[in-house]
Amino acid sequence: MATPQVPKLPKRRLGNTGLEVSVMGFGASPLGGAFGHVDEAGATAAVHAAFAAGVNFFDTSPYYGATRSETLLGKALQGLPRDQIVLATKVGRYGLNVEDFDFSAARVTASVHESLARLQTDHLDLVYCHDVEFGDLDQVVNEALPALAALKAQGLVRHVGVSGLPLGAFRYVLDRAPPGAVEVVLSYCHLCLNDTSLQQLLPYLAAKGVGVVAASALSMGMLTKVGPPEWHPAPPALRAAAAEAAALAESRGQRIEALGLRFAFRQPGVATTLVGMTTPEMVAQNVEAVLSALDDKAPGAEEADKLVAELEALFVARGVKDLTWPSGRPLP
Ligand code: NAD
Image (tube, rainbow, N blue to C red; front, top):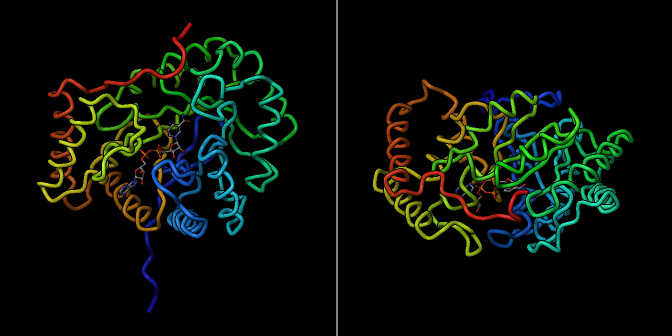
């Protein structure tokens, strides 16, 4: 008997980069232990399950688990065809505090070489300046981006982006960087059930020809049954509303994770959305949720959309919709 064909995730073009990325990307920050310990075998199983389901976009950083995420991802990727993988990492962030950021040309260049070694590869498909709002934004423009452009000319880096929380930081950098210096923006926690503020920036990013990666569809674990980790920066009222939303979903026999993904993956204007996953089971659940979100004719679609709308309304009613938290230095 023929093996049944499991549907795979579709891909989309990422801005003007020419890269084709799966609609759901694999967020590897949890491999660094941000949500609990993950061992090498577990990390490899999750990465391989994601690839088998059509995920070709993998996102990491030297910051995640103080390089552990890159190391584990690098090992896991050894078993997969490199030319079918879009591998993204970051430079400039190495810890929690302002002094742990360094967007100087020398550090950026060294960082890329260190990441290449840990990821066991000869090129990086995409390198972002990580959480630019903690650095000197002018240094990002005047040192980090030119250093990355030089690494691009050497073939070590294929494409360049910036990541961060406050949306204003993207405008600051993009208004000052030469055209093409920033090809991709990674925005997190701004395109999920409780926060859709990224939508307001999308026309500007489209006009600049910048590809958009949305990250943290589950708001860094806040939109899960187990709730956010200790370190999660959401204010208490937002955490409380998220817990209420999870309980409401459960009372209707639904999983908050699936509904959160449904909401995020039905948002227009982004090429791909990153979700942090640590087990093959999580990968399978999330792939199913994403495929169902993308299919208007999926069984139960109308009912699911109604519940998702109810959950979004809950955040509005509690006065926490689009509520964010301080991150980095005040914008200049
Ligand atoms: P997320 O919103 O994707 O949530 C991850 C959490 O959700 C983890 O605890 C995971 O175990 C849990 N989860 C996922 N699927 C689940 C399921 N089916 N059932 C139960 N729990 C489930 O948050 P994230 O990992 O922070 O964001 C995704 C990725 O985006 C990161 O891993 C990272 O690669 C990237 N990111 C980048 C930045 C940045 O550049 N500044 C910031 C945030 C995230």
